[in-house]
Amino acid sequence: MMRDDKNILVEGWEALAEKYWSGEPASDQPIWERIIEGWVTIWGLDLKTRAFEEIQRYWPQSLPLLEVAANSATIGSCDGAIIPYAVQTGESLQISYYLRMVDAKDPEFCERLADFMRTGGDRVCRLGPISDSLVLPDFSCYFFEWRIEGISLF
Image (cartoon, rainbow, N blue to C red; front, side, top):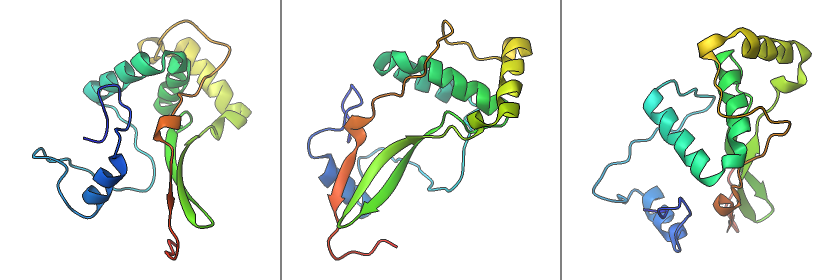
């Protein structure tokens, strides 16, 4: 696989990814995927629990941000989502991660979120003490850049 037991990309992951993208199986175990455009909210408890454990293990300082994301999703917002994004800069392609916080700029949304946090009861996601700051997980280990000389992506 491309990641070790600490969820860090292994040495030589680029070659593994290239083989995978060319259609060569990564292992005997199938990996089902779907490339989509838009947003997905995960409502299933098993996957949520595994994601929570991963964040708690590697980025515990980001739990308040996860709490904001979970509660925002419950009231219909995608705020708090962290997404990979490919950016072509000259002769290279970079994959970076961005935080979506669009609705947080809307005072009406902020009031709805605050009201939900006060009155939502058991539906409110609480992952720890209230924090005055939100800390992004450090995804720098997932950043990569590829030279794409002579290839037009768009």
